[in-house]
Image (cartoon, rainbow, N blue to C red; front, top):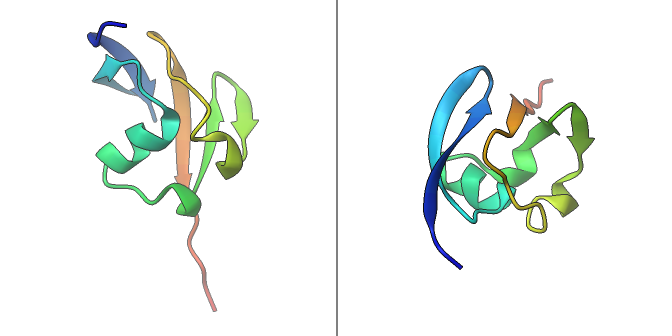
Length: 71
């Protein structure tokens, strides 16, 4: 398996990544805590339990929303 640079889109911003890459690894590489975000990948909501199994593909588009606790 080769490690190839490809592009994905996150919150409207094009980001170059090296595939293969899981969603979990992408979030960690971006400095995010996977359990504190909600992800919509290609129009489909994902639960945090799916992040480690979800392999990103070239051209994927996601929206990332940080969960903020308030009081």
